[in-house]
Amino acid sequence: MLKFMKKIPGGLLLIPMLISALFATFAPNLFKVAGITEALFTTKGINYIVGLICFLSSTALDLKKLKKVIRKQGSILLLKVILCFGFGILFIKIFGLGGVFGISALTFITAICSLNPSLYLALSHDYGSEDDEAAFGLTGILCVPAFPILVYSIAKASKIDWTPVISVLIPIILGIIIGNLDKDMAGFFGPAVTILTPFMGWAFGAGINIINAVKAGFQGIILTLIFYLLMFPIIFFFERKILKENGITTFGISSIAGLSVSVPAIIANSDPSVAAKSQTAIAQIALGVVLTSIITPILTGIYTKKMGIEKNKRA
Image (cartoon, rainbow, N blue to C red; front, side, top):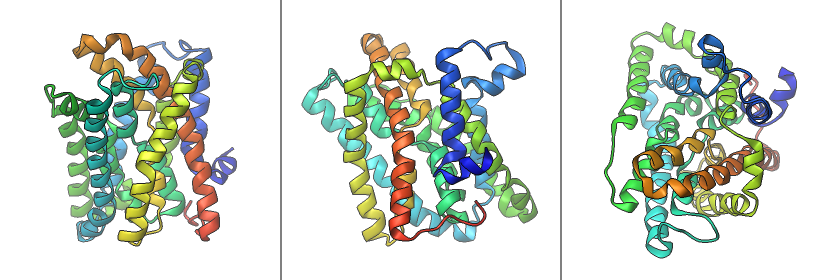
């Protein structure tokens, strides 16, 4: 099974996520028995495992190499942030909150802002460098619901809550401090990131109902196309032509995270005006999660083969 997962780009994440989604769809209450089991096998463990991996991966972020990480992943993520704000504000200006083609502003902003850090980690482990893996913590900042909520709030001129963003930064900063004060600790924590990747994939998959996702049908497919067409070409051009890098980071951040499925409900709790659109948004985003989780690794495999980029031996 392990050899099979390693043959697939991002397979350490993708396979557990899809298996977990099957359980979430056809036996949603199987692991809801409280205690340790529920914490490990349902969405209740998402925040802990994302926080833990943010901490662990950040211990490998050598301050001496921080400039390189900020130059590459930092600038790429900054570009994504700028694009998200730009497209989000533009979408509402042109189409309003109701959106177009059955895709509301809530759905659109949540999708384009999304980034699956676990797939980024898996692809970086397969085709990137140790510095690429260490940048996982930076991708974690955009993974949490706080980011799309922030973009949606600004685009709609609503109240902004910075607390979730700060909560992601704390384990990253602690990891950097510990890893740089004690290199032995950094070496000790590093390998745990790979071990935890399947568990993170499972946690994300536990929030995906495949049947509801498929019901989104046409809108879900359109949303996926919009996600790729708006974000990928610009970021890929920036990484390849401006930064002169191999393009793997762009592929790594080009998928919709399972955690994004929770965003419409979170926003609906504080903004009753979008409550009616939240369930439709959840189904459309869920289909986007499933499609991009499958399509991005396939595209990555085709691209790396064409470019002659081989899998790392450490993979």
